Image (cartoon, rainbow, N blue to C red; front, side):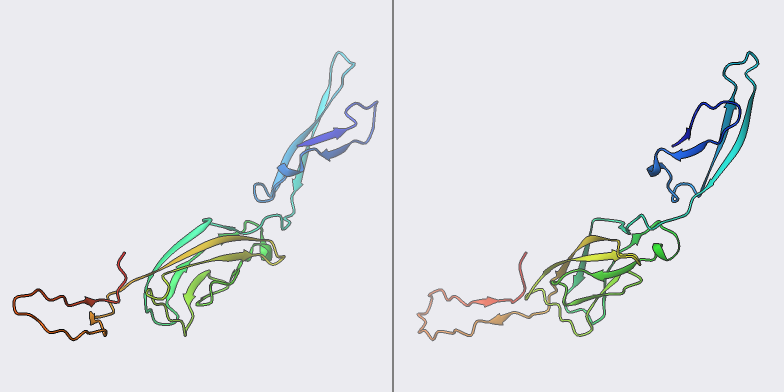
Length: 198
């Protein structure tokens, strides 16, 4: 991770410690690093040596984007829920410290007009005025965004299925035909329900 320059000196000299692998210096893994610097005589039979402690305190930077716990979320909700019903809760983590680790949530694109999202909790609700009818539309999908204070973000996809309920009684077909029946002949009566069959 570190390199000393120069590595060989005569009598007394100043050396510089350079960072060789900056990716390994990660505040989220270590807040500080401890090393020993070793100086050894190379052309004497005694090969005397000395050590010095080096302590490096790392400062955090906003080098991480929030990350969702899943790439997609699946929700199932019965049709005709009251407005403001809870649909699904999503979560994202940002390992950066302080305000850089604060995450705000939002719905990312159109297709989610009937839903709203609480920006700090990640809970998705139905709009107060929304009417979800499985006979009209039973599938919705959209993206949600988790964003930190500097605009680093990630996306996840949400799939919502509106479950059909038995909310329509059977109804006679309005297209009745008057027909003279012959005694003993079979008669066909059509009755259908408006409920989806899956």
